Image 1 (cartoon, rainbow, N blue to C red):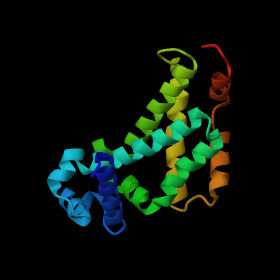
Image 2 (cartoon, rainbow, N blue to C red):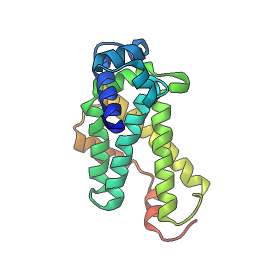
Image 3 (spheres, rainbow, N blue to C red):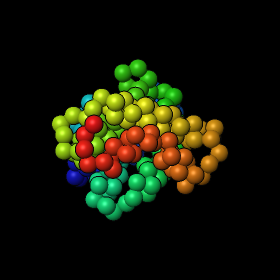
Length: 187
């Protein structure tokens, strides 16, 4: 079995278990037994269950960013694919938001990775090693706000469909950040 296939089988097992159990109560042994592999097989791929969750998230984000920068999706389509990935696994994601805290905080780790991707992408667009600090702050504020809005939306606290939430999230981008991406210079 290919390494990527095994990782996907393990994440599928974890998501299945998380539909009925709190993430903090699920063990590596349970994840492994649920999909018919040994705990050692799990540890050959991941140091712990939290890294398994973040691997799946990073993989999904990387795919969306690749599609956007290759031109195969628009900003709106990419953002919709991103939030629909959460919606398709909403029980698991809400479980992760509520039960992965501290150094393994789901919202903090996912935000940090998304921020890194945005900063890297913007820096590459501007052909610079480091973005001006104010744009790094805009990105952080936007991503943390976006993730909390998505969490509220998944929990049913916001009554909008995917297209409406995407439109709202796009409109929340700071205009100075939008202008920065369009402009050919570094300020």
